[in-house]
Length: 428
Ligand code: AMP
Ligand code: GLY
Image: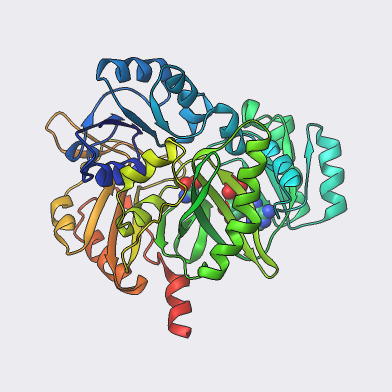
């Protein structure tokens, strides 16, 4: 097959890395890709959200199968456009993608499907929203309804913080259209985990679980980011917990979406809080996670391309997914200043040395090449330095050995990725 992967992050590098090794892959393209993806795919300079340009390039190169990485093209209907022209696609259409792009839709669906999630209400009026927050008390969570690049959520520890977040969204409109409507929800206490299931519209197959670190600095402090590191498997999701997640969360969702006329095909990413009373849904995403993908894919023994293709063709029934018996851990290196303002264009050295560390691989996220062909930083999250080993602690060791090979003064990383899982294992 000739395959096109859409996207340019660490997630897409990990997907391309695995797809390029599949015996089913004859030729791999990536749009737009990055300086690391170049080594496994031919990169085409087309932004992921230019859906008509992507459509044209699929015709031009006679692409057989398209894998869409990020949520934005999915929410713009790229999968529908491609399918309507006869292409096979991994990823949901626009209607099903609403489960990520509209928090209100996701919450209403949970009610219909009986999926456990935080108690909530939707608001468009600031005074009503404040009255509700006041009645419920802090801590309380305020969320912009639409996609806000991960910045639309405030976990308010005090009512003042909650009021400020309500004013930002509904009065100052800092999120534009995405914040015109708010979800205010109950604060859930517990441990967070990212759970992934492949869904072909009918059948849902558990894929894997991972945990990421959302805050910028060590000790889980600092501002929220897209994810500063991850590991898989997630010790908190044992076989019994996985069964529970499938039964109580994923399966009712897939069934309800089918009944609503928007069957879900692709990967359903459930952001979960494992509370004292069991798993509860924080949010759904309609794509693989980043950096979770960078730690799940290296553990996968089965052919990723065959799995994604079977998903797109409604043929998941009876398929078993096989995994290597080791753990993976990824340390994200970000540009100094991220998630606030940061500079682009600094040269990154030592990548070959990092890749030479046994069982380590550097996935590129925001990278590009300058005129001299040096790899340079081109985004906030820039590299995902990943290692596999028998335990999470060993994988952490190797990943930081590889990090230490990288010569990039303009970047930083957390030094404690995996701490919770490692502490838990030491205690056991
Ligand atoms: P979201 O964009 O919905 O994933 O929210 C971002 C982060 O806010 C999550 O990863 C959680 O850490 C936190 N969060 C969101 N909703 C809740 C909630 N209801 N209770 C506790 N924490 C939450
Ligand atoms: N790491 C969380 C996400 O991909 O949304």
